[in-house]
Image (cartoon, rainbow, N blue to C red; front, side):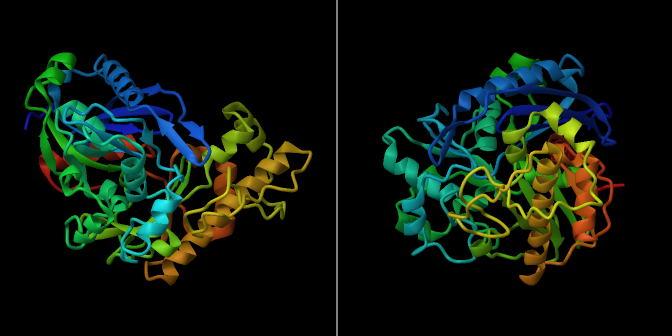
Length: 433
Protein backbone atom coordinates (compact mmCIF):
# COMPACT_ATOMS: atom_id res chain seq x y z
CA UNK A 1 0.00 0.00 0.00
CA UNK A 2 1.19 3.49 -0.88
CA UNK A 3 2.41 5.22 2.31
CA UNK A 4 0.52 8.33 1.19
CA UNK A 5 -2.74 6.45 0.61
CA UNK A 6 -5.95 8.14 1.70
CA UNK A 7 -9.29 6.66 2.73
CA UNK A 8 -12.60 8.44 2.23
CA UNK A 9 -15.78 8.04 4.23
CA UNK A 10 -19.07 9.46 2.93
CA UNK A 11 -21.97 10.05 5.32
CA UNK A 12 -25.35 10.63 3.74
CA UNK A 13 -28.18 11.87 5.93
CA UNK A 14 -31.62 13.35 5.39
CA UNK A 15 -30.48 16.94 5.00
CA UNK A 16 -26.90 16.76 3.79
CA UNK A 17 -23.74 14.89 2.92
CA UNK A 18 -20.31 14.94 4.54
CA UNK A 19 -17.05 13.36 3.43
CA UNK A 20 -13.85 12.90 5.43
CA UNK A 21 -10.47 11.69 4.16
CA UNK A 22 -7.99 10.09 6.55
CA UNK A 23 -4.50 8.68 6.16
CA UNK A 24 -3.20 5.29 7.31
CA UNK A 25 -2.57 6.78 10.78
CA UNK A 26 -6.27 7.70 10.99
CA UNK A 27 -5.54 11.41 10.88
CA UNK A 28 -8.00 13.66 9.04
CA UNK A 29 -6.50 15.13 5.87
CA UNK A 30 -9.58 16.76 4.41
CA UNK A 31 -13.31 17.16 4.91
CA UNK A 32 -16.24 18.69 3.06
CA UNK A 33 -20.01 18.92 3.33
CA UNK A 34 -23.04 19.88 1.29
CA UNK A 35 -26.63 20.50 2.32
CA UNK A 36 -29.71 19.21 0.52
CA UNK A 37 -33.46 19.73 0.90
CA UNK A 38 -35.32 17.95 3.69
CA UNK A 39 -37.58 15.01 2.78
CA UNK A 40 -41.14 15.81 1.73
CA UNK A 41 -43.85 14.70 4.16
CA UNK A 42 -47.07 13.17 2.85
CA UNK A 43 -49.18 12.14 5.82
CA UNK A 44 -47.32 9.25 7.45
CA UNK A 45 -44.92 9.15 4.52
CA UNK A 46 -41.56 10.86 4.03
CA UNK A 47 -40.03 10.89 0.55
CA UNK A 48 -36.87 12.14 -1.07
CA UNK A 49 -35.64 12.07 -4.66
CA UNK A 50 -32.48 9.90 -4.84
CA UNK A 51 -30.97 12.25 -7.43
CA UNK A 52 -30.65 14.80 -4.61
CA UNK A 53 -28.37 12.35 -2.80
CA UNK A 54 -26.05 11.98 -5.76
CA UNK A 55 -25.96 15.73 -6.39
CA UNK A 56 -24.91 16.22 -2.76
CA UNK A 57 -22.27 13.47 -2.94
CA UNK A 58 -20.91 14.84 -6.21
CA UNK A 59 -20.61 18.39 -4.82
CA UNK A 60 -19.08 17.14 -1.57
CA UNK A 61 -16.44 15.05 -3.36
CA UNK A 62 -15.60 17.96 -5.66
CA UNK A 63 -14.93 20.09 -2.56
CA UNK A 64 -12.94 17.31 -0.89
CA UNK A 65 -10.70 16.72 -3.90
CA UNK A 66 -9.76 20.38 -3.91
CA UNK A 67 -8.07 19.67 -0.54
CA UNK A 68 -6.48 16.28 -1.17
CA UNK A 69 -4.94 14.56 -4.23
CA UNK A 70 -7.67 12.31 -5.62
CA UNK A 71 -5.06 9.94 -7.10
CA UNK A 72 -3.99 8.95 -3.58
CA UNK A 73 -7.44 7.71 -2.55
CA UNK A 74 -7.16 3.94 -2.06
CA UNK A 75 -10.69 3.19 -0.86
CA UNK A 76 -14.09 4.70 -0.13
CA UNK A 77 -16.98 3.59 2.11
CA UNK A 78 -20.48 5.00 2.44
CA UNK A 79 -23.00 5.11 5.27
CA UNK A 80 -26.65 6.11 4.97
CA UNK A 81 -29.86 6.35 6.94
CA UNK A 82 -31.12 2.98 8.18
CA UNK A 83 -34.32 1.76 6.56
CA UNK A 84 -34.37 4.26 3.68
CA UNK A 85 -35.34 2.30 0.58
CA UNK A 86 -35.97 2.63 -3.16
CA UNK A 87 -36.52 0.50 -6.24
CA UNK A 88 -34.45 0.95 -9.40
CA UNK A 89 -33.99 -0.58 -12.84
CA UNK A 90 -30.95 -2.47 -14.16
CA UNK A 91 -29.03 0.78 -14.75
CA UNK A 92 -29.84 2.13 -11.29
CA UNK A 93 -32.50 4.59 -12.42
CA UNK A 94 -34.94 5.11 -9.51
CA UNK A 95 -38.49 3.93 -10.02
CA UNK A 96 -40.33 6.43 -7.88
CA UNK A 97 -39.02 8.34 -4.87
CA UNK A 98 -37.13 6.82 -1.96
CA UNK A 99 -39.10 6.13 1.22
CA UNK A 100 -37.12 7.57 4.13
CA UNK A 101 -36.15 5.84 7.36
CA UNK A 102 -39.13 7.28 9.30
CA UNK A 103 -41.73 6.70 6.58
CA UNK A 104 -44.58 4.90 8.35
CA UNK A 105 -47.27 4.56 5.70
CA UNK A 106 -46.94 0.78 5.30
CA UNK A 107 -49.35 -0.15 8.10
CA UNK A 108 -51.19 -2.82 6.11
CA UNK A 109 -47.91 -4.39 5.02
CA UNK A 110 -46.62 -4.41 8.60
CA UNK A 111 -49.76 -6.21 9.78
CA UNK A 112 -49.35 -8.85 7.07
CA UNK A 113 -45.69 -9.29 7.97
CA UNK A 114 -46.52 -10.07 11.60
CA UNK A 115 -48.02 -13.40 10.53
CA UNK A 116 -44.87 -14.46 8.68
CA UNK A 117 -41.75 -12.65 9.92
CA UNK A 118 -40.06 -14.45 12.85
CA UNK A 119 -40.12 -12.53 16.11
CA UNK A 120 -36.32 -12.40 16.29
CA UNK A 121 -35.93 -10.78 12.88
CA UNK A 122 -35.32 -7.01 12.70
CA UNK A 123 -37.90 -6.49 9.92
CA UNK A 124 -40.94 -5.48 11.94
CA UNK A 125 -43.19 -2.45 11.89
CA UNK A 126 -44.24 0.04 9.20
CA UNK A 127 -40.87 1.83 9.20
CA UNK A 128 -38.89 -1.33 8.45
CA UNK A 129 -37.24 -1.71 5.07
CA UNK A 130 -39.29 -4.82 4.39
CA UNK A 131 -42.62 -3.04 4.98
CA UNK A 132 -41.48 -0.27 2.63
CA UNK A 133 -40.51 -2.82 -0.03
CA UNK A 134 -43.94 -4.46 0.13
CA UNK A 135 -45.63 -1.05 -0.09
CA UNK A 136 -43.51 -0.08 -3.10
CA UNK A 137 -44.32 -3.39 -4.79
CA UNK A 138 -48.03 -2.73 -4.29
CA UNK A 139 -48.10 0.94 -5.25
CA UNK A 140 -45.52 1.37 -8.01
CA UNK A 141 -45.16 -0.22 -11.47
CA UNK A 142 -42.60 -3.00 -11.09
CA UNK A 143 -42.08 -4.40 -14.59
CA UNK A 144 -38.70 -2.63 -14.88
CA UNK A 145 -37.54 -3.18 -11.29
CA UNK A 146 -34.29 -5.08 -10.98
CA UNK A 147 -32.85 -3.91 -7.65
CA UNK A 148 -33.90 -2.99 -4.13
CA UNK A 149 -31.46 -0.43 -2.74
CA UNK A 150 -30.87 1.25 0.57
CA UNK A 151 -29.60 4.82 0.53
CA UNK A 152 -25.95 3.77 0.92
CA UNK A 153 -26.37 0.95 -1.64
CA UNK A 154 -27.61 3.35 -4.30
CA UNK A 155 -24.61 5.64 -3.82
CA UNK A 156 -22.33 2.59 -4.00
CA UNK A 157 -24.03 1.86 -7.30
CA UNK A 158 -23.41 5.39 -8.57
CA UNK A 159 -19.71 5.01 -7.71
CA UNK A 160 -19.19 1.46 -8.91
CA UNK A 161 -21.89 0.80 -11.47
CA UNK A 162 -23.15 -2.12 -9.33
CA UNK A 163 -26.57 -1.70 -7.75
CA UNK A 164 -26.74 -5.26 -6.41
CA UNK A 165 -24.47 -4.81 -3.38
CA UNK A 166 -25.30 -4.01 0.24
CA UNK A 167 -23.90 -4.39 3.74
CA UNK A 168 -25.25 -6.55 6.53
CA UNK A 169 -26.19 -3.66 8.82
CA UNK A 170 -28.34 -1.85 6.27
CA UNK A 171 -29.95 -5.15 5.26
CA UNK A 172 -31.22 -6.17 8.71
CA UNK A 173 -34.50 -4.24 8.55
CA UNK A 174 -35.12 -5.64 5.08
CA UNK A 175 -35.18 -9.12 6.62
CA UNK A 176 -31.60 -10.36 6.28
CA UNK A 177 -30.60 -13.04 8.82
CA UNK A 178 -27.29 -11.97 10.46
CA UNK A 179 -26.81 -15.36 12.16
CA UNK A 180 -27.24 -17.58 9.10
CA UNK A 181 -25.88 -14.82 6.83
CA UNK A 182 -28.60 -15.22 4.20
CA UNK A 183 -31.93 -13.90 2.93
CA UNK A 184 -34.57 -16.09 4.63
CA UNK A 185 -36.86 -18.36 2.61
CA UNK A 186 -39.95 -16.94 4.36
CA UNK A 187 -39.52 -13.69 2.40
CA UNK A 188 -40.89 -15.53 -0.62
CA UNK A 189 -44.19 -16.08 1.23
CA UNK A 190 -44.59 -12.29 1.29
CA UNK A 191 -44.07 -12.04 -2.44
CA UNK A 192 -40.52 -10.67 -2.30
CA UNK A 193 -38.56 -11.52 -5.43
CA UNK A 194 -35.17 -12.90 -4.41
CA UNK A 195 -33.54 -11.70 -7.63
CA UNK A 196 -34.19 -8.09 -6.56
CA UNK A 197 -32.30 -8.51 -3.29
CA UNK A 198 -28.64 -7.46 -3.04
CA UNK A 199 -25.62 -9.58 -2.28
CA UNK A 200 -24.69 -8.75 1.31
CA UNK A 201 -21.18 -8.03 2.64
CA UNK A 202 -19.75 -7.42 6.09
CA UNK A 203 -18.82 -3.79 6.72
CA UNK A 204 -15.18 -3.15 5.93
CA UNK A 205 -14.93 -5.70 3.10
CA UNK A 206 -14.25 -4.80 -0.51
CA UNK A 207 -17.23 -5.03 -2.84
CA UNK A 208 -15.54 -3.83 -6.03
CA UNK A 209 -13.79 -0.87 -7.62
CA UNK A 210 -15.04 2.47 -8.84
CA UNK A 211 -16.36 2.68 -12.37
CA UNK A 212 -14.31 4.12 -15.20
CA UNK A 213 -16.80 6.98 -15.45
CA UNK A 214 -16.31 7.98 -11.81
CA UNK A 215 -12.55 7.56 -12.05
CA UNK A 216 -12.51 10.03 -14.92
CA UNK A 217 -15.03 12.38 -13.27
CA UNK A 218 -12.91 12.88 -10.15
CA UNK A 219 -9.46 11.93 -11.53
CA UNK A 220 -9.32 8.95 -9.17
CA UNK A 221 -7.09 5.91 -9.57
CA UNK A 222 -9.19 3.28 -11.44
CA UNK A 223 -8.18 0.71 -8.82
CA UNK A 224 -9.83 2.68 -5.99
CA UNK A 225 -11.78 0.17 -3.91
CA UNK A 226 -15.40 0.53 -2.79
CA UNK A 227 -15.68 -0.91 0.72
CA UNK A 228 -18.94 -2.12 2.27
CA UNK A 229 -20.20 0.58 4.63
CA UNK A 230 -22.95 0.62 7.22
CA UNK A 231 -25.81 2.66 8.64
CA UNK A 232 -25.22 6.24 9.73
CA UNK A 233 -25.63 5.52 13.44
CA UNK A 234 -23.24 2.55 13.33
CA UNK A 235 -20.66 4.64 11.46
CA UNK A 236 -20.97 7.27 14.18
CA UNK A 237 -20.46 4.53 16.79
CA UNK A 238 -17.28 3.32 15.09
CA UNK A 239 -15.99 6.90 14.90
CA UNK A 240 -16.12 7.35 18.68
CA UNK A 241 -13.56 4.63 19.40
CA UNK A 242 -15.93 2.51 21.51
CA UNK A 243 -15.14 -1.15 20.86
CA UNK A 244 -15.13 -3.04 24.19
CA UNK A 245 -18.00 -4.94 25.82
CA UNK A 246 -20.17 -2.53 27.81
CA UNK A 247 -19.03 0.60 26.01
CA UNK A 248 -22.04 2.51 24.70
CA UNK A 249 -22.66 5.36 22.30
CA UNK A 250 -25.67 7.64 22.11
CA UNK A 251 -25.98 9.32 18.73
CA UNK A 252 -27.78 12.65 19.10
CA UNK A 253 -28.68 13.47 15.53
CA UNK A 254 -32.06 13.90 13.84
CA UNK A 255 -33.10 10.93 15.95
CA UNK A 256 -31.60 9.39 19.08
CA UNK A 257 -29.80 6.06 18.69
CA UNK A 258 -28.59 4.11 21.73
CA UNK A 259 -26.18 1.20 21.21
CA UNK A 260 -23.85 -0.87 23.38
CA UNK A 261 -21.13 -3.43 22.57
CA UNK A 262 -22.19 -6.95 23.59
CA UNK A 263 -20.59 -10.40 23.47
CA UNK A 264 -23.80 -11.82 22.04
CA UNK A 265 -26.72 -10.57 19.94
CA UNK A 266 -30.06 -9.50 21.37
CA UNK A 267 -33.12 -9.50 19.13
CA UNK A 268 -36.33 -8.00 20.47
CA UNK A 269 -38.27 -6.32 17.64
CA UNK A 270 -41.22 -5.91 20.02
CA UNK A 271 -39.09 -3.28 21.74
CA UNK A 272 -37.40 -1.98 18.59
CA UNK A 273 -34.10 -3.69 19.49
CA UNK A 274 -31.80 -5.37 16.98
CA UNK A 275 -28.15 -6.47 16.75
CA UNK A 276 -25.45 -5.86 14.17
CA UNK A 277 -22.09 -7.64 13.82
CA UNK A 278 -19.18 -5.48 15.01
CA UNK A 279 -15.91 -7.34 14.49
CA UNK A 280 -15.93 -10.22 16.99
CA UNK A 281 -18.76 -8.68 19.01
CA UNK A 282 -22.26 -7.39 18.45
CA UNK A 283 -23.68 -3.91 18.50
CA UNK A 284 -27.04 -3.99 20.28
CA UNK A 285 -29.46 -1.11 20.33
CA UNK A 286 -32.28 0.78 18.75
CA UNK A 287 -33.47 4.16 17.51
CA UNK A 288 -35.98 6.53 19.04
CA UNK A 289 -38.04 8.92 16.94
CA UNK A 290 -37.16 11.65 19.41
CA UNK A 291 -34.09 13.79 18.82
CA UNK A 292 -32.81 16.78 16.91
CA UNK A 293 -35.72 16.85 14.46
CA UNK A 294 -38.02 17.63 17.37
CA UNK A 295 -35.76 20.40 18.68
CA UNK A 296 -35.48 22.01 15.23
CA UNK A 297 -39.24 21.96 14.91
CA UNK A 298 -39.35 24.55 17.68
CA UNK A 299 -35.99 26.33 17.42
CA UNK A 300 -33.30 27.09 14.85
CA UNK A 301 -29.61 26.44 15.56
CA UNK A 302 -28.95 29.95 16.86
CA UNK A 303 -31.91 29.82 19.21
CA UNK A 304 -30.83 26.40 20.47
CA UNK A 305 -27.36 27.70 21.26
CA UNK A 306 -28.61 30.87 22.95
CA UNK A 307 -31.32 29.18 25.00
CA UNK A 308 -29.13 26.22 25.97
CA UNK A 309 -26.55 28.55 27.50
CA UNK A 310 -29.23 29.79 29.91
CA UNK A 311 -30.36 26.36 31.09
CA UNK A 312 -29.74 25.46 34.73
CA UNK A 313 -29.50 21.65 34.76
CA UNK A 314 -29.35 21.57 38.57
CA UNK A 315 -32.97 22.81 38.65
CA UNK A 316 -35.15 20.18 36.89
CA UNK A 317 -38.37 21.43 35.30
CA UNK A 318 -40.41 18.30 36.17
CA UNK A 319 -42.32 18.80 32.89
CA UNK A 320 -42.32 15.05 32.11
CA UNK A 321 -42.19 15.37 28.31
CA UNK A 322 -41.93 12.61 25.70
CA UNK A 323 -40.76 14.73 22.73
CA UNK A 324 -42.00 13.48 19.36
CA UNK A 325 -43.04 15.29 16.18
CA UNK A 326 -46.06 13.06 15.66
CA UNK A 327 -47.61 9.80 16.85
CA UNK A 328 -45.39 6.73 16.88
CA UNK A 329 -42.27 5.50 18.67
CA UNK A 330 -39.78 2.73 17.89
CA UNK A 331 -37.54 2.42 20.95
CA UNK A 332 -37.39 2.12 23.96
CA UNK A 333 -41.17 1.76 23.55
CA UNK A 334 -42.54 0.24 20.36
CA UNK A 335 -45.91 1.90 19.88
CA UNK A 336 -46.90 3.19 16.41
CA UNK A 337 -49.66 5.24 18.07
CA UNK A 338 -47.72 6.76 20.97
CA UNK A 339 -48.71 10.43 21.15
CA UNK A 340 -46.17 13.23 21.67
CA UNK A 341 -46.10 14.69 25.17
CA UNK A 342 -44.83 18.27 24.99
CA UNK A 343 -47.39 20.12 27.08
CA UNK A 344 -47.87 22.22 29.09
CA UNK A 345 -45.51 24.66 27.38
CA UNK A 346 -44.01 27.28 29.71
CA UNK A 347 -43.95 30.89 28.56
CA UNK A 348 -40.18 30.82 29.09
CA UNK A 349 -38.51 29.14 26.08
CA UNK A 350 -35.48 28.28 28.22
CA UNK A 351 -37.64 26.12 30.46
CA UNK A 352 -39.42 24.61 27.45
CA UNK A 353 -36.12 23.61 25.83
CA UNK A 354 -34.85 22.25 29.13
CA UNK A 355 -38.00 20.16 29.45
CA UNK A 356 -37.47 18.74 25.97
CA UNK A 357 -33.86 17.85 26.76
CA UNK A 358 -34.88 16.27 30.07
CA UNK A 359 -37.49 14.19 28.25
CA UNK A 360 -34.94 12.99 25.73
CA UNK A 361 -32.49 12.15 28.52
CA UNK A 362 -35.18 10.05 30.17
CA UNK A 363 -35.74 8.23 26.87
CA UNK A 364 -32.00 7.50 26.71
CA UNK A 365 -32.04 6.16 30.29
CA UNK A 366 -35.05 3.94 29.57
CA UNK A 367 -33.34 2.64 26.44
CA UNK A 368 -30.25 1.38 28.23
CA UNK A 369 -32.37 -0.10 31.01
CA UNK A 370 -34.44 -1.93 28.41
CA UNK A 371 -31.34 -3.28 26.69
CA UNK A 372 -29.95 -4.59 29.99
CA UNK A 373 -33.23 -6.26 30.94
CA UNK A 374 -33.18 -8.14 27.63
CA UNK A 375 -29.63 -9.44 27.98
CA UNK A 376 -27.22 -6.75 26.77
CA UNK A 377 -24.64 -5.35 29.21
CA UNK A 378 -25.61 -2.18 31.05
CA UNK A 379 -23.17 0.53 29.91
CA UNK A 380 -19.89 0.94 31.74
CA UNK A 381 -19.36 4.20 29.85
CA UNK A 382 -21.12 6.37 27.29
CA UNK A 383 -19.71 8.35 24.40
CA UNK A 384 -21.78 10.86 22.46
CA UNK A 385 -21.97 11.46 18.74
CA UNK A 386 -23.97 13.72 16.45
CA UNK A 387 -24.77 17.41 16.62
CA UNK A 388 -26.31 17.20 20.08
CA UNK A 389 -23.04 15.91 21.55
CA UNK A 390 -21.72 19.48 21.56
CA UNK A 391 -24.49 20.75 23.85
CA UNK A 392 -22.85 20.84 27.29
CA UNK A 393 -26.05 21.61 29.20
CA UNK A 394 -27.72 18.61 27.60
CA UNK A 395 -24.77 16.42 28.55
CA UNK A 396 -25.02 17.56 32.16
CA UNK A 397 -28.74 16.71 32.19
CA UNK A 398 -27.94 13.29 30.71
CA UNK A 399 -25.21 12.62 33.25
CA UNK A 400 -27.58 13.49 36.08
CA UNK A 401 -30.18 11.11 34.67
CA UNK A 402 -27.98 8.13 33.76
CA UNK A 403 -25.26 8.33 36.44
CA UNK A 404 -22.73 6.64 34.14
CA UNK A 405 -19.20 7.71 33.22
CA UNK A 406 -19.20 9.88 30.09
CA UNK A 407 -16.07 9.51 27.93
CA UNK A 408 -14.88 11.85 25.22
CA UNK A 409 -15.48 10.46 21.75
CA UNK A 410 -12.44 10.20 19.53
CA UNK A 411 -14.55 11.61 16.71
CA UNK A 412 -18.26 12.33 16.45
CA UNK A 413 -18.79 12.31 12.70
CA UNK A 414 -20.27 9.28 10.96
CA UNK A 415 -18.14 10.09 7.91
CA UNK A 416 -15.04 9.44 10.04
CA UNK A 417 -16.41 6.01 10.99
CA UNK A 418 -16.96 5.21 7.31
CA UNK A 419 -13.42 6.37 6.54
CA UNK A 420 -12.20 3.89 9.17
CA UNK A 421 -14.15 1.15 7.39
CA UNK A 422 -12.49 2.17 4.11
CA UNK A 423 -9.12 1.88 5.85
CA UNK A 424 -10.08 -1.50 7.32
CA UNK A 425 -10.95 -2.75 3.85
CA UNK A 426 -7.34 -2.23 2.78
CA UNK A 427 -5.23 -2.93 5.87
CA UNK A 428 -7.43 -5.19 8.00
CA UNK A 429 -8.97 -4.94 11.46
CA UNK A 430 -9.89 -1.63 13.06
CA UNK A 431 -7.62 -0.67 15.93
CA UNK A 432 -8.16 2.33 18.18
CA UNK A 433 -5.55 4.05 20.28
